[in-house]
Image (cartoon, rainbow, N blue to C red; front, side, top):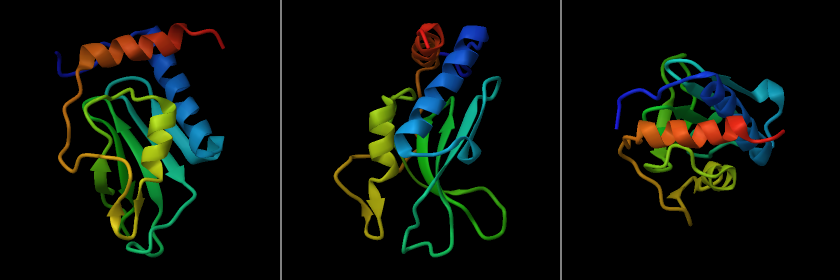
Length: 139
């Protein structure tokens, strides 16, 4: 395991395709998501939903190369987002599973889907291999 994902052109392209696939599954249009395919690799997908516990705040899926997916809400002050939980140690979970994760919390907390409250540490070699697969996949 290494700290950073070894990024080459195929991994960068795979990451973009992977994030787009997740965005498609959650119904986010091109204006609702963005990603950076170099270090540090990151993604943000705005979700069309609100949480009663956080009135007036946007809900989003976040992806970081070191920990994978997190569900978060915007702050009112423009500071870092408030992370509600992490999907788990698999940084490149299936887009379908990530979509389920995106709707797995309501005003009472997580439901149906198990997720972590502690920041996981993803296996960067495995992450690179999986993203490379998305980069090599035919469009």
